[in-house]
Length: 72
Image 1 (tube, helix red, strand yellow):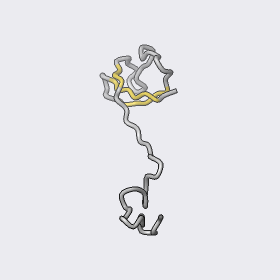
Image 2 (cartoon, helix red, strand yellow):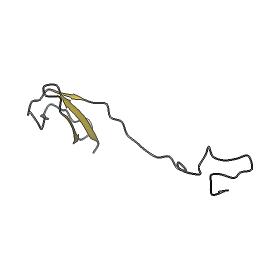
Image 3 (cartoon, rainbow, N blue to C red):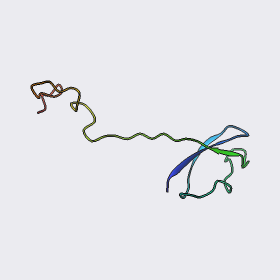
Image 4 (spheres, rainbow, N blue to C red):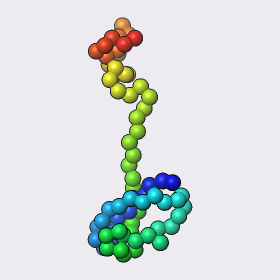
């Protein structure tokens, strides 16, 4: 189940909830003020790419020596 973020229009409280895909927010209420005036927020996420990190990609020299450890 994905995590959705909501913000209450009444008190401004932000919260997250596990919710089934396509499930309506009509049954949800703000955990702080218990009102049902919620707006779904746009979520951001972080991820890593294979090979991302020290010694990967942009630190390679023309002699194929990458990073401070000399990875080849």
